[in-house]
Image (cartoon, rainbow, N blue to C red; front, side, top):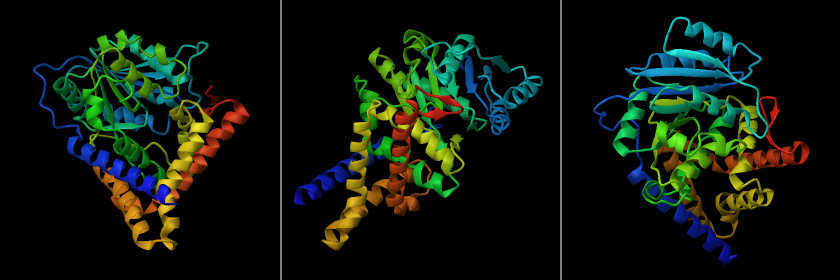
Length: 366
């Protein structure tokens, strides 16, 4: 028992240390000076059955205060009104162009193939891939390009401010910040060449065109669910410059709207995060039960020591939420959050056993 307590203590102290380092070095969008000249930028949006959000997304992008901008949306064989809505907006704004996706080739996932086509169609010096549900404030593109110029980035990935409303969202979505800020020291991402220290968020990937072409576009990740992280690793493997920055409210996103969308969205990616290995996912689930739920169970044995470990875990959860503009006081909900993530892990394992891969937008992602 004592060995387990020592393990939990050291783990939480390590996470607290990494979180503190990231708190000191956390880059935020909107603080970089403007470049001498503003380059041509292409905003690239793959869209499949996004009729409920696409009009708001495009209207926000069309209000961008940026001098040299094109916006290209690829309709990926939508069966709803996505293409019609986008075409209607394009008729009144020359900066917006709509293209239709080509048939999906063998060994490609839908989104990756859509992004590959968008990259080929773009004319900009900078290629910014973003999702159909990401909202951009009017100065956001300027802030992204200024940050990329100031940091000399070849790939700048922005972590949008996540909006959460329902309890399912509040219990799960902020854990993304916990993973990034609690496990990954940002200075090692920025200042070491190892691809092991790389992360990215596909909601906003800003590539220098030359760097994107150098790694082969999306072709090297054609069949990968976690294409964003792998693209970041390829950038570092080529000796190019990867930078990460918080969206700071300039770019924000509400990824999910209810428990089913939360469950399916995270279940789609969670196994890929562990190399597709069910055994590693189960070990990770056990690990998080141990460090975040174990101290609560230990209260009946040694109240004082357990209370210290519980407080340490809650501080880590609260601080990572505060740094990313989430509700810090939801840290008290960490135990049910771990339980919900366990349910999501079980969903991913079930899909693997039943279908061979996760289900997403009517497709089996294999």
